[in-house]
Length: 89
Image 1 (tube, one colour):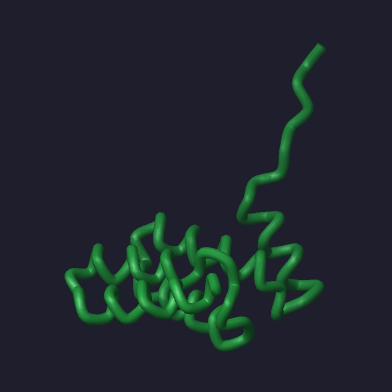
Image 2 (cartoon, rainbow, N blue to C red):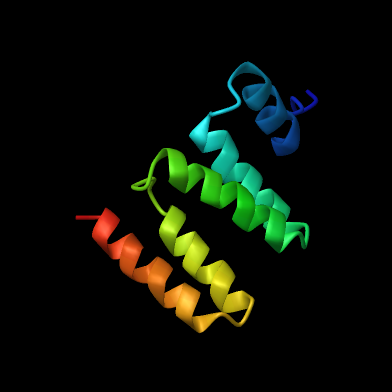
């Protein structure tokens, strides 16, 4: 019996954002996809949008911290880390 095919993540994200452009979960995944594709500036931009809408979105500040570390931006990484810790309280 053939295995059922699963839609690509990018297709699912696009469909969810077409229904609701402010879908935080879809935007968070989009930020990760952009980053993984080597488009870190776009990933950070989308992540900033998530954090504008929900400053306590789970994991977003720590993801932002990681991206800033990857970009060699220790001050921004530290700021994101501190904000992430505060958001978890």
